[in-house]
Amino acid sequence: MSLLSRHFLVAVAGLASGLSSGPAAAEPISYVILKEGQPIGHETVTIDRQGDLTTVQVQTETRVKVLFLDFHYHHQRVETWRAGRLESMVADTDDDGAIHHIEVSHPGQSVRLTVDGTTRETAGDALPLTLWGKAIIDHGNLYSIVDAEPYRVTIAALGKSTLALGGREMAAEHYRMTGDVDRDLWFGSDGLLLKVAFERRGYPIEIVRE
Image 1 (tube, rainbow, N blue to C red):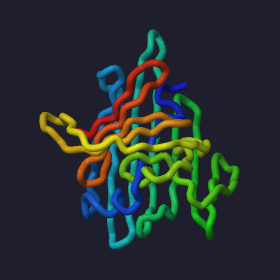
Image 2: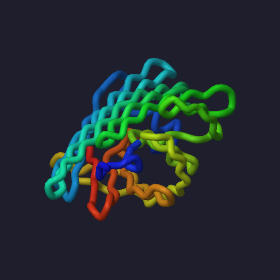
Image 3: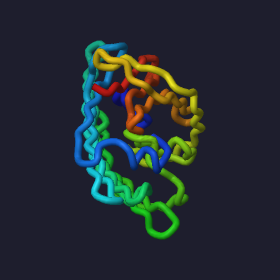
Image 4: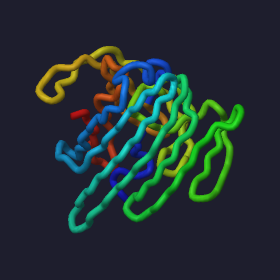
């Protein structure tokens, strides 16, 4: 299984602030994925805002070599948000040969999840663990973007900080997620993700905006 397994994606908080700020039209944002400080992949997030409709496309590619073994992870998804609320999501993942397809919709007050052809419903306040913006900061009821596994988490605000990214200092808000998923998250003044840090199988992993 990939070092960036189904708990990886990955995947964020403050519905209004995370969706209402930032670029006004489609604009790709690039992230480098690091293992022990060395690049192992990239993630691209493209955000397109048209009135109250926001469409987000995410593509993630990683390849890791451990001893004589090669692991790969490919993920792509499309999220549709309207007026700060998730309307739908479609995600496809190849996690080192484990293939998953997810379709999410919001009929009525519930969330409908179709995972690899099997449909179930969950609580209407559940959100995917999507980290590009601050949409999940106030939500403890989450699910995996890979296989829709449910997560219960607590997210604490740790205050303002400064990150050195691309040779410049950037103001950030620091949050820590604990529970079924552990992440340190930093968001910029535009409400979008600057950095994620966590540990996977004993290895430090970072996702950093380029």
